[in-house]
Image 1 (cartoon, rainbow, N blue to C red):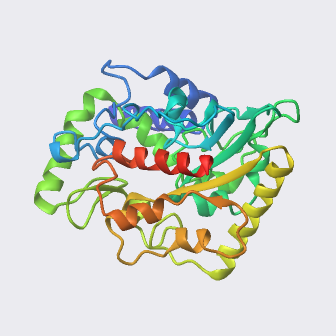
Image 2: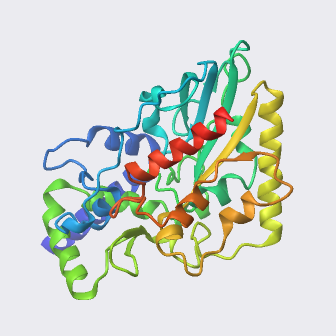
Length: 355
């Protein structure tokens, strides 16, 4: 009798968790309300996002803090007549508070892909659009021209938010099987991270994961989950960026047809925003950490796009700078760059917009 009651309870509990994990509204509520330091809160990633994902908090060599300040204040004689719009991701998100780091810039607006992105140009100023995108997003993002629906003149149309959604995305709101109840939705790969989040992602369980991760690291030099250790042992990488069978990887093969399609879509985007009033449009691709740190076998995606003779959009080429200077530009336990890498990029932007 007890076994039967226990079986019914586990079945009911499993169905309840599955239902919550496939409900967009429920997941939004959970993600919003489980931040904090309570025992039931989400595990905090305060030593680097990859450190947190792999639960390697006790391995000090990977401890990382993304640089969100400390940039050089420009001291130049260029007239402040440029309005700079940066359409970027997490690499550029923090720049909104540092307009004084950019030469000749009167107004800086960072258009984050995660939020509403609109603008209204001041025709009395020089208006520049800078598209910043990390390498692991570019093949999916520029496979079409969705950007035209994501950044728009505020006096024009309403935005159709699609965002950067692809095999790299860990979006807890994309696992719904309701209300259409399509068969393929039952096999939605995003259900598993939602289930893991609801069943195991709690502060009070963090020590158990840390002990397991430490044993795995010290015995086998491996990281857990979606994280891998670099060949030299000094960096953590997002697993998908080094998986030769994943399209966001630095080593996944690239074809000429794909490069031509990406270039064509970038040109359509360039022409659209030039006609829309921007004086110039730039593209800057931020290399995957593995591309720079572990270059052997690289598929050359960035130079193939940047050096394509058909490309119309101007390039801010941080890839070549990183490759030719051989410095440490990335955080050892985070997907982002350090202050040196970000400052080098800002210097390149300043050089481009003042030439």
